[in-house]
Length: 435
Image (cartoon, rainbow, N blue to C red; front, side, top):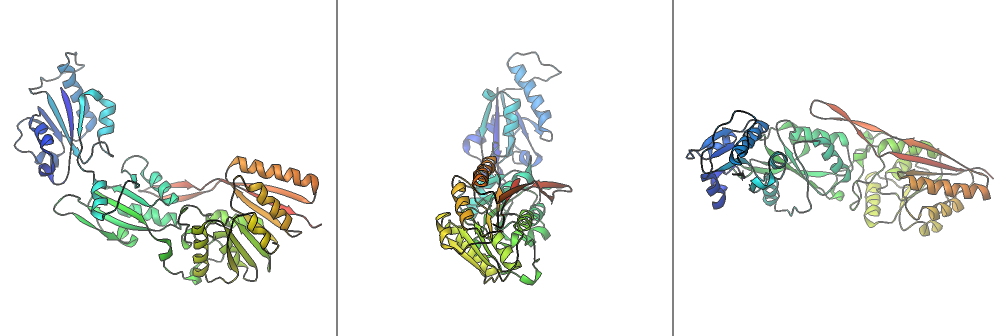
């Protein structure tokens, strides 16, 4: 006896291959939802409406036990011939479908899969977009946690399966709550493969307000960062600009210093008026812009080695209408020798070159100045402490302190509020005392 798992679409029996239809015609037992069974009214075999898959699996195991002359554990019935069980499921059973559970509960040798086109495959084909690099979020499991992680990374293409619980509105609420610098275009694909199929772009506000088919796919496509809407600067806070007000880096869209960490960095910098400030490894310039807005009489240099980062800094600078922020495209520490000596330095980069960067920064830093670093790996902290130990032995007018930061933001899910952790970091402040 074999168990055939046949994927089926909204086009019913007409969308099945000849081999899949032949398997169904051979079925001794046909299992599926009311809708799936209605596609085959002519089949006279025994039919079970699929309500609880676990119960169905137990019954199928009894059928298999009878067929292999095993003594069943409970009262059973004799299966008719031929010995074929067919389970009808939606789309591809091994793509966010029942396949995973069936493999775990039934002998793999007894299972044969006949996949249909998945809804995600249909969605991307309707949009005429290659999807081999897309990321997927199923409607089961840690839905919001998985989607949050992908949004924070700023991946280019996301396909999110939605249902009566994980609705497009819930998805839109999550995107709004995250307030990320990466922006997406939303396409809602409803009833794919059926006569009432509907596919079209929707603004975020429409996801919150409109009603959609219970089983849909929301495709999220990362927008070109340079097409962002203009800012209303009068409505922005003076301190702690929302992350969503910035444009992210094209090749590193998920990389930015979050607002809460930014505020702590500004506190550690202890800024004053009319200072020269370096932002080394500026990313999209979020820290530089905060400083330039707070201190219009200061000169801020945003140093970034990537072209996409430099472009984001310049675009953000234009959006915020800043005249005292200068974007510098170059690699530290080499580029630092060409800049005015600073009163304050923020270092947002790390890695193998950190020791050299610190050496040049210490050489150029004015007496009474400070260097602030944001580090997220222990090895970089060890590098800074080792550098500090060597420095203090030669020049005792240096000191340091470290603040460990572990923050979480509340996110509204489906009738529940949970906390989403920001990246844990250590803020290291190095002070050069007055000679």
